[in-house]
Image (cartoon, helix red, strand yellow):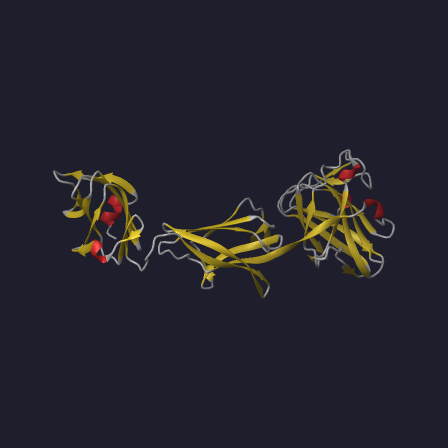
Length: 382
């Protein structure tokens, strides 16, 4: 489009120069718009269409200058028949009724301006495996594409991308309402659990969504934990380390508290609330075999997320764990200290195969929830 038209008419309503019989807009001797009756007129120009609004007190013939021949013209979202408009000498002519009229002059093959729904597949990518999870219904209307999806997949951290023909669809915006984020391998990933909401928005001037798939690459799947029976914990047979006896930390600074009551060793690791703050503990395993991990902790948060590593690698079967709040910080009430054990998809405690000797357990605060640690146990499976 010419710079003159863009400067004069982009997305604002303007009043034309009143004439004895109508309205006319002129620039450098070129008529940009004219009508047979006095009207208010505004327009925006794009590659696919000219969108105009005309407010007329009576029926009027209007003419708009464009720089190429249109393929279709719409009046209030209705397709005009070929005899309902004309194009000559760079001017599109048609008749509008009294009142407010929306005009679209299309240069593409769009045949309807009514809202159109498209199904876009949502695919879970884990390593080399791809699994279709759901279809995202994308509604396209008035040049905009929008969609909403209630997350149907597993709880975890995901790298989210809209793609078109295998390449990133840069113009598409994926919204994850208040979804916490953490970095995995230096790449941001968003935490999603069931019924979290994903939103999609994009410009769709040709009424086609500018994407053909939404991919969610698994950065880490969350393992749930169960609250074990405190009375059943076998402290004597377990490799035990007190929460406050961590060997290293990074990304933050823990407070060791002796003010919290009812702890196993008289103290706890306290104020573990900064995203990226990690702690390491050393545990000595007396003999090779399968073990169950138990973390005794307290938190008033609703959900607590921690990544778990063993000897420098993500813990097999439980690289990220999700713990429920205990109702408090363990200051007075002994019931606020609860033992958490990661479980597999069947709800059974995750078995960890360990060799005899020293092992390093690292836990990292992923998104900033507070969690106080009393003790950590590795209990042999009978």
